[in-house]
Length: 413
Length: 152
Ligand SMILES: Cc1ncc(COP(=O)(O)O)c(C=O)c1O
Image 1 (cartoon, rainbow over the protein chains, first blue to last red):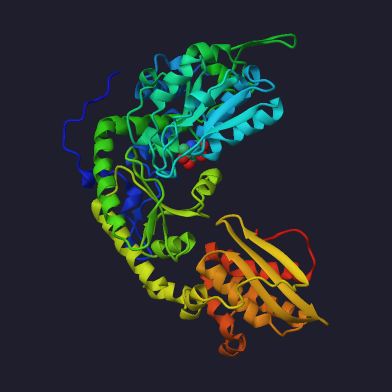
Image 2: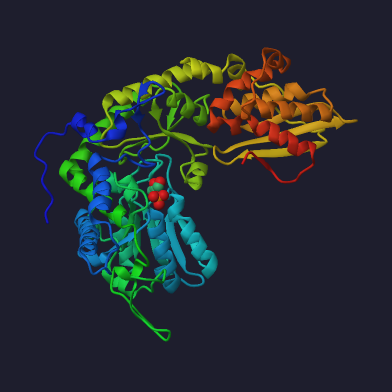
């Protein structure tokens, strides 16, 4: 199957009309949804795919001897093929369905990690990781008496990579790195980091939770060993996510959870585990979720990931200029290599108050620490306001944001 | 600003956010407590000097949103000079004001003085914790508990 090449012009009005939730008002104002880094909204095609699956094909997969079972299995495995194509993996055997990005990291930590990491070994992450790519490694380090090392972040919000070769020591067993920061928006040079790590034969896990819905992903070109993302940020349903792993590594890993579907044969003396990727999918998976994710990918392919990236870049540039004109606004994360996220503080106004005031203008943003406490400490801010973009946001919405911020500032002054 | 928001961000709240009363350290404190609101990263240190069951002096430090800062400021004004029993009573009233469905009459509200400014908070479930943090911390200090107060 090949991706349909989009031929028509990028029309944000047309795109918006695909999202039923965007057609509403909040507190009497048209909804302006700028909390996309948290989760994105779902196009009608995704909603319909869920309803359609349950009303025409619902059944368990891989084990039914009837028509519906066949349809459900095809829908589920069809979604896996869509994911494979979307991230350019070599084989569907390398695509494991999990609940979310967080579960993908935990799976790797608990299987690959527990077999390859021992006392005194090191795991290298960065100071801009989401807790999802910190805590599972910390738990592993605690269990194995291993050491967690950290690539620092500079004032612009970029990784300090000068020190990378020193941080990659003979004891480093794995690098875990976020592709795009959920707080700073920084898009990290993962390919460079992977090359450096591979020079010492160290595998790399990429957290693509934020990048996957903003830019095309090619795992073979990137040459990452593991990559994780969540369906719910990719315009798909909650409860479904993906772990990509190179076949050679996955094959070598012990199973994680035990149960049905992950086995070939079971006796009380011995269990033979199933092939990839089923070995890592114990029990009945989120079948409808996978189907919904497949529909989201179809929708994205039709719209075009590069076109979305181009469009969001114009929004980003526009928003950066606008917000720079708001008195007292301090942008956290000003890397030239940045996408679709504005994190900031407003002098004299606590982020929580900004959040409440914006809500009353119909503007949904996030305030707080964004599951990245170490990064907040790095920038010495107790919390930030975060407005994050998706393919359906408009220039006018950013105008409204900037105007509201100005009046909030005046009110609190 | 729209009217509903004005209900929440009353002028007295904005004023106390800009210029909080009783803000700063209290070296001669006899009781201390720390309150945290993990959701927003707010924290508040409260210090009291109590003599013969009377709160003679009370001060606070820390950082937080306008609602929590103004609430701490107005709480210190309200309990200063009161007995511990009276302060407990005020806590109960304030708690009812921001969390219950109970109707307050004009008389009752005017009796509460400036604290009545928080009457609008009950319509904002996400902000109730901000308004109550200082009061929970006060309870903690008055009852000599060593656990940090949270509004969870
Ligand atoms: C960079 C990053 N990594 C990981 C995650 C975790 O995603 P999930 O909660 O879907 O597992 C997030 C979600 O905010 C994220 O932004």
